[in-house]
Length: 341
Image 1 (cartoon, rainbow, N blue to C red):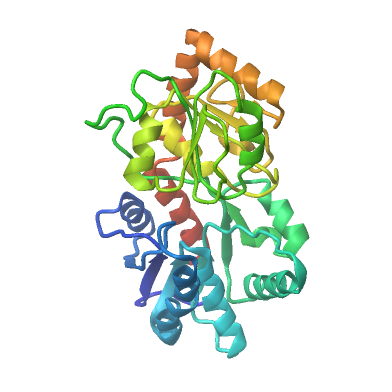
Image 2 (image 1 turned 90 degrees about the horizontal axis):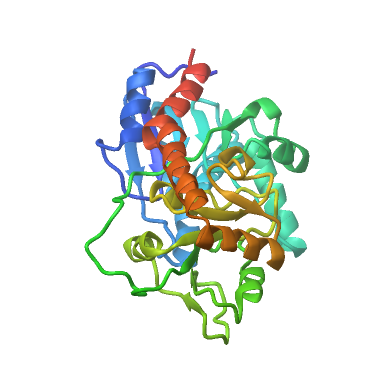
């Protein structure tokens, strides 16, 4: 393992952060190391072309500076994958302790899909990558079997998110209505959700720019709800539904934790990838993607006040205890310390 004393340590992000970031403060406190934050905007509002360009251009400077780096934590997985690929391509000496975070691999079809899998496999299985952080414990076996990543290179850390205000000063966007809210586009089964609720008495709002707009009066699909606008709808919703497609792929956790923070009861597809975040009947209701199970869960949340409030409070407690940014900083610091002994 390369020595990291007297070298700069970097956090590469695709969102803005500074020295006040609780995750960074806890990481530095627990490791005794200083970390420089470098970021470039790469969230959902940035065009796909721009994001892909950033994946390859943003890691170039750290690669050229690698001899002066100690620990490199790539919060956006592709910054770390590209960094490792450059190291492998040019067969450079390993001088950096590289941790790739938020790792999610989604198989792609056709010849390009095979090339993509070969590229990811070669990068993450190389000696230049020390740890690959996943957000579901079940993904360790999945990625070991699918990509050949050594089990001891894969590390599960529960996702964390920043605290968000529980209230805002704006009135409800659907005044007087107890509506259902769903958001996100990664691995979502909106076709199931729309089919199940079309023509029912329930009012549904979906925030996703990849979901088609249905031709029914009780369902609205918004392609323009981001950040605070999306959270505004979530705050004023009655509950949140997260319908997932592939039951092995890590997805849905961000919306899940946002809803938990806000005390919104969640109905989520029963999946292996999200099982370590939830307890059915305690902090969420889990279902298989059938109309019967979805409607039964909604009936509970609309007519059983005791269950509704119990789920809401337990969700808030779950976030505070396991998914704050400080909690993730401590978990990540443990990984860094184990690699830099």
